[in-house]
Image (cartoon, rainbow over all chains, first blue to last red; front, side, top):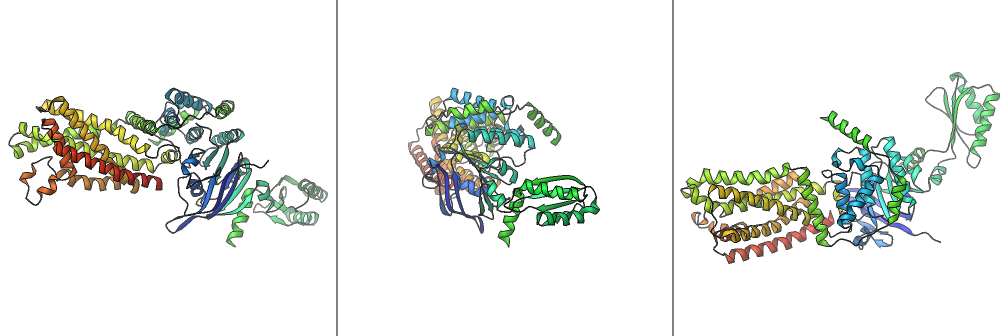
Length: 318
Length: 286
């Protein structure tokens, strides 16, 4: 069975005066997954989302959401999507409850149904006791939750989340992640933009990396990581004066590149691709122990998306 | 100030319970999808939103209710003697005009509200809803009708206390206020459009004031145009504001001014058609 495609975008372009905010973005987002759009500030993530959500007209290129053209069938696209913008898409003067009742009414619920839907949503998002307060007084985490609640008054087929955790504390961020996982679990496709590599890694099944208005890499988090290298072993030694010795042992045992870190007791060995990372790590530690090098701490890891990102953007600049 | 705010926020945060995943899952699974609301129902929902804003920020009514009373008192007692030789007669002439002037002036608030909205995230949400595109603006205008009616009632009440007596009776007064509201509804589209195409609410304010001042003073509100230079009279007599004032004044006085009423209705239809179209076009392109 082939999976339905939620978004298909070809060559989207958007200029603002002389600035090319989006410069030919292609995307293909399979339905029922979290798709991460990763990039630094100003990369064109928000502009891309705003075009796909029918808020901006592309200057060139085309895109479809569940087979409906975002320009020609904008009204029909709007029946399929909802948007949680980068800045809370709520009326700050109104209370949380009033916001949800208003939006429920606008989705066509009759007054009593709108009230009960709003109350249910507040309860599910842990906001019942704050429901009667003006949104102005909400913390960042509460606003985000209310904003997401407003986006699922009617379960959308596609939900745009534009930097949903920017500026949140770790606890609120984890709550948003849980909510995103629950929403996807019920079959909604989520397009998530983020500047946090960890967030894309945690939530997304595919990621497009965007920089200066272009997609510079696309794939699963695993594919992106392995495109940079196999991984590394990081070590902290007990004695700084054993570091040079350790470097030689590692270079020989692993036949790999070894980098000395700024920290005088730390060093990093890049592992060879195509071999078991754990085996290589165990072998290296064994050799160090035999040579009498005291190791305080070690860790074995895949390249982080940070490294992926830096590697990709450097390649583009070079 | 900042300290208090932080405290309130952390208190609120403590009050917020964790997300209940099971409940959330059930809500998502319901998949209920009611039929889209009618154009009128969505506009009414936006009007309700404006009324809630008045409830939460009642200060915004202050301007609208106090300003007209000040205008009425000031013009009657300061200029009445000089212009008409007595305050009683002048009030009889002035009240319908000054009511038009104060209420038409307050229509510019609509443009400012639209501008404030469009620069906030909330309008992104409204614009991604599958609703009638004009609904947010029409909602504003409907709620504004309430504010205008309230301002009209207060001015009329104050006028009665000061000695104003309408020869047209209750029916004439209600019809006159009705005509004023129709015109305000239509004229507000100029400001909704301006609110969408300008950068900040301050720009909206300064542009609209520079239109409103000449338009209201170059009129028959304060003085009879017959006292003006001959070249100016035809201009003053034919502005939409003067026609509206003639209509409202005639209805209050019970003289059934059919030409002025008809002209006002034609102007109203014109404003709605032209600026309603421009507003929607600007809204869709935003």
